Image 1: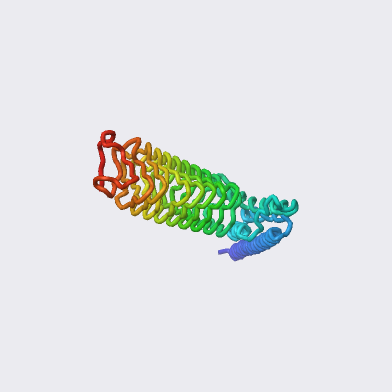
Image 2 (image 1 turned 90 degrees about the horizontal axis):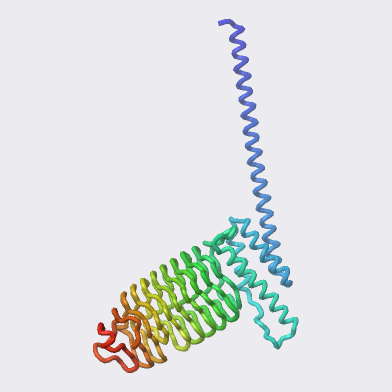
Length: 385
């Protein structure tokens, strides 16, 4: 081969290799620069977010209500922007609600004291509004699935209407609903563990009207209903477990009027109905397992419909007061009083809307005093355990 051609070929190859090396070096240099830039930006972002957190936390600790109010919105905005530490920001907001605070001083207090209380209450209610807004369907940034710790919080107002508790744990244990209105209307409990155990309902109006209990666990065990009003009217119990075991209904009013028990389990075992007005008027028991085991009962179930599922009053105690089932419809499912104790008060089945599938009772002939059954000629089908 011609030496000049060989030399030219070698020179061209070297040039190509040199160009490739130069381009590779430039590419690797740019990648290194890009990675360094990314690290710098990430460090700067983290530093900025930490500075925002420190500022918001300082504002929440201010002795000026207006500054604390700004801190609430600053912490919530940070939670929206900082997904990695969103839980921490939300924990701080919940912790603010758990902080002790001075109760309502009453109308006899001086004007400055009353104004200070109202300002403090507005900050607390704003925290609740901000949290609830992030639990609603369609929220710009959803906080569903996070844990919320309201343990021991004193609620004297607040609105969780239409909130969706679809994941995580929401803890209202030992909380006190002592005044104002705290709304859970149209809330959806579909996957969370929501805990109201040992909560005290002493003066608030707390409506769960038309709430949907379709999954997860909602626990009212040991809760004390001693005042105010708690409404489950129109609520839909279609799945999961709702537990009132050991709850104490000793005052106020609790109603399940028009509630629909179509699935899941609802337990009132060992609950005490000693002073509250508890209503199941027009409630529909069509598929759930509802148990009133061992509970001393004083409830009103007028117009309720028992068409499916299982409603057991196992070892329930009817010891006083009046329990009414007038216009109730017993058309299917299993309604079982076979182990219940009827030792006082009045239990009235005498005017049912339908007696085609009556309950099971613990007697075979004459019912105990105080128990009123339909007339045989009006409702010939009867069965006893």
